[in-house]
Image (cartoon, rainbow, N blue to C red):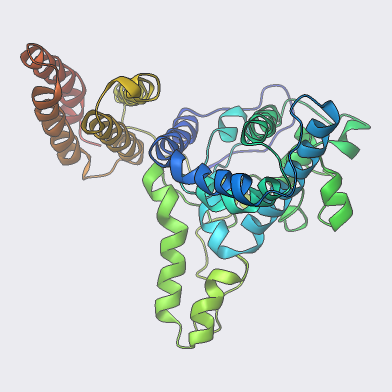
Length: 382
């Protein structure tokens, strides 16, 4: 854990390699989950629209687009608010808030399962007649808009701060200061927070992160840590009502017989988790991350031309690799063994799944990559 002074000058640190890679790893796993679950994700919306809609909005009418946008942003507000006020949803959404930095890479840090939990919140739009393609376009806009507001380099924007979700407004949302917690849930518009009493103006710069820090660079652990904590509390508490309430109440609640443990530090202390690879292993860590990203890109853009077995192999290679990159930054003792197992599985998969006539070449290529990544790790264990 490293203590860093929070400064407002132009020389402040905005990105750290370990944090940025972890943000991108979480976002990558979210995209992979979407690849394998997109049919389920959208099936309910299409079913309601086709069978139960009251009317049909005209995609050629700008007025209808405006109404649909207001509806989508409204329901986004309530889903986002639920993610902060109900533990069951917070267990997924917490991934987005675990970073102790605030920059554009944090915008890409997303939960693998939140997209599935949020789908029912938008079903009323299908009932009201928003066509699926209109919904997808507006949902993409709502998501893309929120990318640019994850920055510390843009100050307050005057009148826009009163209407839109701006960088200043969203910095508040990511703050762990008491007055900033559970505030400013809007997507594009901040007017919903003003209407429903959850707006907070940015005053001092927030302390970013969650009140009980993750202190870990493993993206898989980031996705399951809080859910595991809730399950552990449900098992330990004696009252059956509390076993249910731990999932339905907010993140600040605990049963009387299972109180919070004191965290080693909080963002308000001005400290950040900053574990790094041993000297000489930062470049191999970045190389491993790029290999995992290459597998994801191949899956996203070439997945339609390969079978499910190849898709699964690429996804496993990427996720396993991203977890091991986290282990490298965290200096985990299990990393060398995990890397040997991962590359052994990769070589075997290349030999079995490559097109006939290319299997030996694929296996040899995988073996060369294995040597390039394993040798530095074996020579200097984290």
